[in-house]
Structures are given as structure tokens and as C-alpha cells.
Image (cartoon, rainbow, N blue to C red; front, side, top):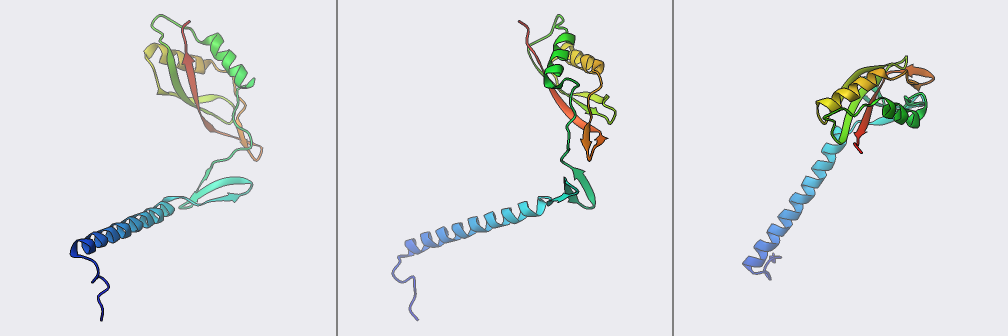
Length: 158
């Protein structure tokens, strides 16, 4: 039987084998990574005109018919914040991120900071959000639901 590597020197054969082994290992890792990613990705299927992700008999709604909104929309929210936020001594320029829940009745609950600047800016954002009028709650199938909301509030001293 004729050796298929007889025309290759020892060094060429070793280099060729290592290249083949390296290519095989890379292909194997890519294939394994794709299978692992597919196994960890939840399957999303439409259900009752809402999109739901289902895993272990738990449904998570990721779609709403109507999002929670401030009474006069984004412009109204901006106006409300400008009228109520006071730039006190020690206020710095930057952005504070606050999180809250707009409940079924439109009230803000669970108000907390996600990322703050300093105690003065942070307290001012929390104070003003507690003054907020009722929002229009989010709805699914025409029924109000509680929703989480994140709001960035920018401070700029002129």
C-alpha cells in the first residue's frame, strides 16, 4: 500500500497535521458553542396576540398594547421635571437614573435609584418623582398592568 504522505518531508507532514488538527479543533469549538447557545436561548412563540417567553411553565409578557405614559406624554414629563427640580447648592452636572413601577392605577411605586451622581442630585430626583401625578398605566388586552420604568434625569447648571 502506497503511503499518501511519502512525498512530504517529516517537517511538512508535522506542519500539515498540526494545521489540520487546529482547523478541526476550531470547527469543533464553533459547533459546540452554537449548540450551547441554542440550548440556553428560550423559545419565543406568539400566544393570544401577546408574545410570551415560556420556560419551565413560567410565562413572561414582553409585549404590551399600550405603554405607561405621563399624562401629557414626553413633553409633559419634561415640563413637569423642569418645573419641579430645584438646582440646590452642591448640584452637579450629569445624569441620574431612577427606576419605578407604574401600577395598575397609574401611581408610581418602588421608586429607587439605579445610578446616581451625588446625594443632592439623587435626593432631588426621588423627591420630584414622589410628586408625580398619576400616569396612564400600560395595558394588555385592554386591562391595566403594573410595569417597570427607568427614567434618566439630566442635570445641567447654566
